[in-house]
Amino acid sequence: FRIFASETLETMIKNHLLAILYLFLFLFPMKSKAQSYQQQIDSIRHEIPKQEGKDLLEAYYKIYNISYYAGDVKQERNSISQLLEEAERQGDVKMQGTARVALLYYYYNADMKDSLMSEFSKQQEFLLKQKDWKYYYDIWVLIVNHHIFTGHSNTALREVKRMYEDAQKRENNYGVGLASYGMGNAYMDIGLHEEAIAAYERCIKALNQVEKGSSTLLDVYPYYCSVLSEVKNYKRMLEITDQIALTTPEIKPEIAFQTVEMTLLIASITVVIAV
Image 1 (cartoon, rainbow, N blue to C red):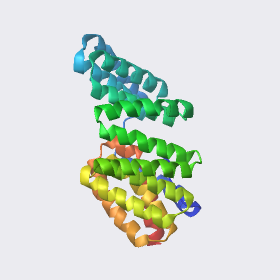
Image 2 (cartoon, helix red, strand yellow; image 1 turned 90 degrees about the vertical axis):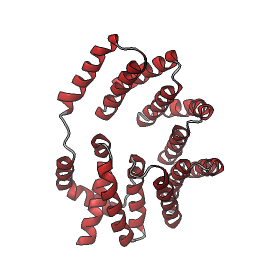
Image 3 (spheres, rainbow, N blue to C red; image 1 turned 135 degrees about the vertical axis):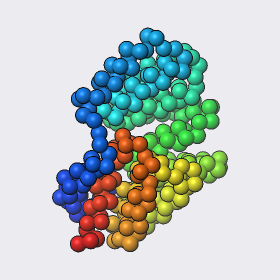
């Protein structure tokens, strides 16, 4: 995810990058990717011929997860195909949903716009049929953010309002939270700061009701703090750092490491205020 930040904040982030990164690595020590991730994958693949059923699906999912965090896009794409094929063979609709969502995220991260848009409706229809609301709203906000990051914020705003109405109709707090997140991003990109702040606050409130301490909230905080910086609401920014301090320890280290940009942004804001 991209972070909306003023040039001043971006400069501060760069200035304090090294010190904060050292601190982050101290809190969340990571193994050398070169020595660990391929060995893990090779070890799992070695056992695959002996596995079947749920164990086989779990093996393919582990390979996907490892390759995703390692940034190995070739193995990531192959593992998604293997996971989906095996899930369909076993009739495991939950794991099918996981693989279908992973495929859309792969297209999104690889900037494969045509594939992302052509697959979205089909995959959302599948998730709607299964009433898998978490994944259903996950991929919907993915499309909203895609519109924003490709310069179509007005399209994104129309889409996210449809998403918000859908979630309200179903009384789904997770959907309301994600829609509010996407709405905040769209408003921020357009330059409607107060509307963005209100949307992010609705998002945090809704997500706290369903999955407090989740990685989803960590995605939201840097966007929220960035728009607060635009209106110079430093008091609220400090309050947000306290919330993050309570949230981050509950997240798995590999997920927390993916949010290093968020940590750098918040820490830089703190330095600015302290000075």
